[in-house]
Length: 320
Image (cartoon, rainbow, N blue to C red; front, side):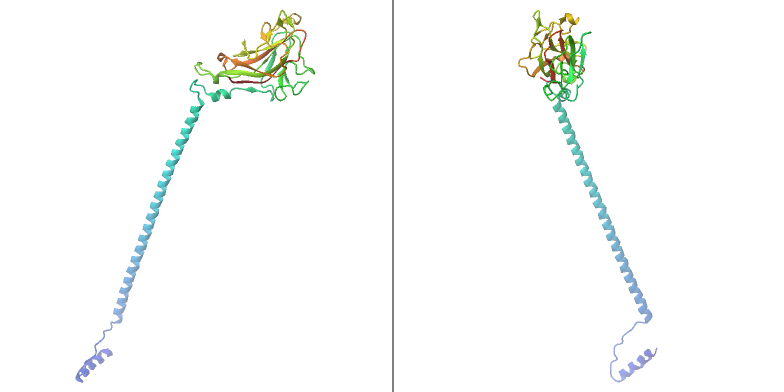
């Protein structure tokens, strides 16, 4: 208030003295200044609000971007799954190829199954299912298994084989013998077609060695051995070996009180020439391709004279 009165007197005095009054400066009241400050504060508040809004917007933008990235990753995963499916298809193709190669297109026979079923007998693990029997009552059997008592290295391979005189301290076999050595049943059905019109030619192979007296009665030998084949182990038929028999046997042994089963048959007899192990091959007729095919070695002797005997080793069924 005092400042106002002072100005009201000062201006007329200056005019009276011929001087121009100075320009007056207007100073706002304190209340107005406070009001303006509040307004500025509001502006600042608005600015802060805008800043917050921008920040939120940026955050949302980042969030959306991350979500899109995840979606792309899922798409890549789907592509990988498709690739795996293609790999599985390739595996199926390989399987089909293997199946095709197992079948003989000419015969319709699965050669892998046929060959896998064919046995080999070297007699080292044991008798391997072979059995021996007396074939005529009141006569004796002759076949024995193991290492020859008189020469451990006598068998064709390793130490064990089958023979008619293994357990004696010198090579010999009993008198009045009628006995056989029989294989276990062998399933040959995998080597013949379902219709029976085609088959894989098979043979029996074995190694043997013999020394049997050459004495003859009426032009026939008295001691000897032969090979027979069977479809069931009950009915037997004569085999035809590639190494031919040496004569016919006379099995009518009067002093043995019986007739040997081998009587009148072609057989190996006499002394083998040369006196060494020899491989024999016998063709197997397809009519004998059953689940119980068998082969046997049939031997007979009279009441006198004996040699070192008949020995068999390393037998097998094989492709012709």
